Amino acid sequence: MVHPASQTSRLVALLAFVATSLGLATTAEARLETVRWTHSRSDASDFQVRIRTLSTSSSQIVSLGLSGQPVGSGYTADVEVGEGDVELEMRAVGPGGELSSWNTAVLRRAPTAPAPAPAPAPTPAPSPEVDPGAGTTIPPTVGAAERLDFSGNAPGTSVAGWVDTTANYGLSVDDGLFSVVSVGGNRMLSTESTQNAIHSTATGTVRNNFEVRGRMAIDHPDGEIGVTTYSAYPTQDVHYRISREAGETFRFASRPGIVCASSDSGVSPAEGQWIRFELDVRDEGDQNRIVAKIWPAGQSEPASPQIDCVDSSAGRPTQGAIGVWSGGLGSKFWDDFETFQGVTGGGAASAPLPPLLIQIIPFEN
Image (cartoon, rainbow, N blue to C red; front, side, top):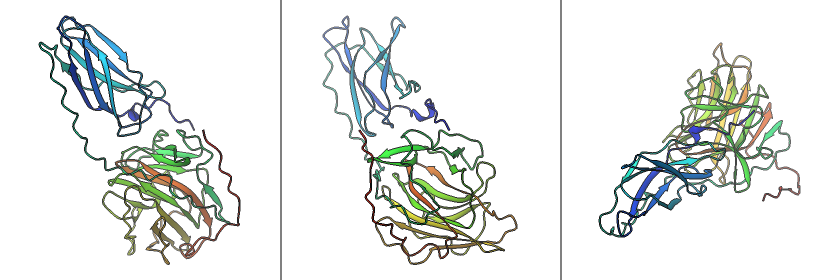
């Protein structure tokens, strides 16, 4: 599965572009303009300024030679604009050479007198995003039917066998929505998309009567995140899900929807906080029983499931794949998926400990 190198939707428009004049002695001489900006991504390879002289309608594009910095960083650069009134516009160059749109032009008039000292840039409002960091890896569990910790996937690529599908429970494939990222040296599945109700589904393995465990995190208070099981994506809009919508707790949901008495975990995630989960679907013959536990990583696992739901509908799914669900603001992260065949009881109060091993961690430059 190819992760597109060119995704103009991934080059978010430049924000807070400010130009301030540093005029020289006369209007007949070239002068410098200082441009300041921020950018919502860290992977830009360069930034460009387009300078249009109003008196002649001539224009030129100048590469600033600045690559992306951590999100939230402020950039400053000086550009020589020549005499007369000019308009300045900026755009970003992506890691594959793709270009964002030009931002709104800013007019800078030629000074008629020495320009006053530029006013200090306003202090930006604090960002609501909190980086969850790598978190604590869930050790491999003896007896797991499958483990998906994304350690074998290169950052910036899609995961082989996982299919991304479009917003609002769409079934069209868009494999640019989710990719592997490296956080603190640990690789995990992530998305920065703010589109509503997008999915990535591990279509390679279809099971029934199984449990999935793992962890997930958001970095924005309005982030929406979830895990799916018994999923039929991308063929049908069918799955069971535990998810959190903006401002809410983790709850059970399904496609198509069913009603159950115990569907709310009562757990509300904080931005930057890793959340552990166990989601079990039991085939009880004439019905599916869905039970789930959700708890903050580092805290004690609940003794019993908070969510207990029954699907006895005639069209209930009999098997499916695991996957992830996303919407809302900010970035979302998932890691350390494990599946267990035929587990009952909503998972043990604590997972069995693995044998004592020496963990080998590949060295990364």
